Amino acid sequence: MIALSDLEARPVFSAPLGLTPQVQWLTRAILDDPDAPVHYLLRGEEWLVCGRWTEARTDFEMALTLSEKLLISSAWGYIFQAYIDRAEAGLRRCP
Picture (tube, rainbow, N blue to C red):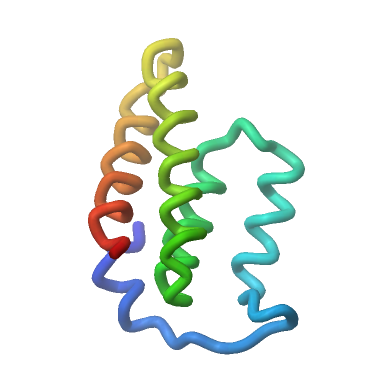
């Protein structure tokens, strides 16, 4: 698992349209499965690395919304609780 402190040490590089390959891949994953909170969570963390606070906040909020719904109805609730915890940590890092 990647800790938020690890994300600060990752290099930032340019890609077409200013999007990293990770953001591009995660955006495709969201288009394929828009109800999976993990994709929004990971893309939010990548937006943090890029300094794109507005996009990060939007993705963390979506990850929270989706995870909270799944937390109640899933036998795998502990996973969704971990997503909630990481999304809340990400939101605290957004200015």
